[in-house]
Image (cartoon, rainbow, N blue to C red; front, side):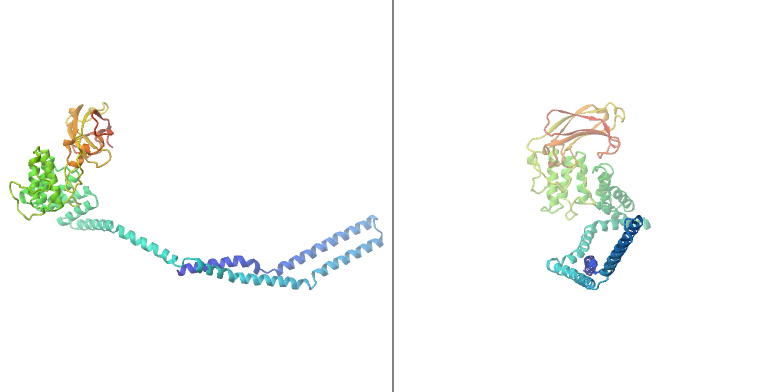
Length: 462
């Protein structure tokens, strides 16, 4: 507030000087200069007229008497003009005028600032200056509060990295670093950190499972291969570990062993609180697996019922994990706990897709290279609604994509009015798209299209 009043006072002084300065100037000098200039003009005029008289006398236009009379008249006129400028009656008037101007200037010098201050106090907002001063502080505090979480995670990552450079054999440190990488979305770095943690702590169940899930997170959430081996190792050491059982059921589901998946999930369901969200999601997964296995509806697990598994697992084991930064979801093509369920469509959908390779790309891949034919929502989740796996040697061919291939009830073809049908040649055999894959798609089409759909693999993924 003090700075404001200092600036305001300075501006008021400048305004007052601007108004009063012309009235406070020294006008005496101007008046004197004007008198001198006028006297000089009159003298020059006298000289000019006298020269003309001399010329007329020399030319004979005037005789001596006329010349002397005219010259006396000019001299008297000059003396009268000079006497007028020196008379005393004009000076007091000029002085009075100048004194009045100075008084007006002085009055304005004080009146302008005083008027401005009075008007501001009457009409202005006296609280706006403190508010403006406080605004940057408040904004900065809000920004710091909003960024505190991100900064703390970044700082934690940096500190962990620095510490592990000094103590590279700290297994717990590598585990924490891997989990923190997941929290910041750095899944590739998380896998490398957890691989190191697993190397240092091979018998730690939680580290092994976190490592398995990190591999799956970077492989389109596919648990086949190395993740399945790690899960099997954990179950061999601790058969009742709920997290390992839950993931084992996912492995069975991805392999198409739906009865085994349902059985495994029933065992996990017996270990959790029947009223919990985990139990609700597990029941949904069990019903899906039983449906895919062809079990009649009357023999499936009821939506709100309790399971009766063939054998009762040990009670008190840890409940199954949710998807989290430390334990990522393991199913872009599999059911996962926490997924939002949507009503199933009343009418099933099916698409007949003819897949072929563009002539300019034919022969670029070996015959046994994997080909994925898929349908995904034109506007919605990126995960496929239906998938068929082929080889390059099978092309051209026609495949069928339908609701029976859905991994979750809400992810059926019939649940989305517009879908994109595509095909991709994957040299790596991985479901996750990679640079160098050959691909093609149809663009958005109706999911109820009953005609044959053609997909040509015609470009290379960048």
